Length: 546
Image (cartoon, rainbow, N blue to C red):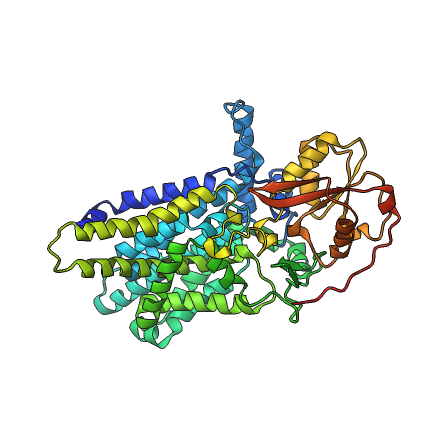
């Protein structure tokens, strides 16, 4: 009866799931100030509105174009009907990703339904909508949300195209060219979101496997033309700046780390190199696995464990082999490279949530089998209600309580040590906006401020109308004589090999003038220089690589 009810009202249930995901992602969206990457996006978007497309060339245009439209709409609202209810830049810049992050639940449910049926599809969508890792990344004005949406939308259309082509060969039934066109357009928008072409290769790899190669006919020449031609055309329409003469040159300079000024990632109290060039001393391979274990709600982890058992047991099924390809060819290469960031994990999460949904479906099945033959008619609905409360309602409640600072969420396995494991991702610049506002309120005219996020300081100095304040980098401070009464802003999320000696020396010399905490986690400490510190000769300490 429940299955029939879900079948009849599947669209309404999915819409409700999307609304829940949207509300969780919107909650307190302006409570966290911009980080450095987001300010770069905002600056580029405002430049777009002035017909200047030369900013932030290392990234494609699609997200910045959406942010530009959102900022323009927010500006019109603030000057008109919304004068008493202003939309802040933080909301406007992140709003496109909030929308597409919530809508990704529809895409995930679509591809899960193609392989596993309606129950797994709706469970997958619900787990994505309430998943703390997905919510956290969808609230950032970064390219990964659009990358995941359009990549998995392309996978969905490609799966539909392959199924339709197989039917066409056997029965001359459904035309399938439209699905290849849709897949090509989706992949073009994926590339216009982020330059990750290898995500397109994953779907080709899946259908190259012997099991699927025998089941579905290979692509013909016209299929390749439809798919790749549409992909290239849509990519150029959405990202025309790629044709500018200086773009490729700048991108090569960026990839060669020509723009990198800082090195190092602080993880559990130890420094690691976080760039591809360093093979020795790079980020530990278990980075993403640890993050999955401590930042996923415990009931979802349990369902994931059951789902992994099902994946191994049913590994030869087409849908299961799809999840294996999407999981293994993400986690293995991304775990082996030295550079790692939490937001990159978002591309792995659709497969993780579908596997967890399979496990959750298995748990429901166990409950039904347990009650089979029992005379009590209330046992099955009672068990189902209990499973629903534990595995769906509890994660939703946890996600609601984790906001608005979702990056700090830890399940009980994290032992309550928020900001300790991955401060560069968990804390980042979360405490910088209130810190800068406090400095602006008390600093004398022409004061000097030092930190490690120049665009963020410039952005909020301008908001405070304190363009008289002088900024310089902490990484350069050991080579300069500090003026009296300089404000030194130290963040765990901004500690690098270049500044750690200076920071340690300051911390040994004096206590912070004040510390800004975010949800109980110290996010930024402010030191004030004294005359005794001005002439101090800073020495580089020995830093051990782990």
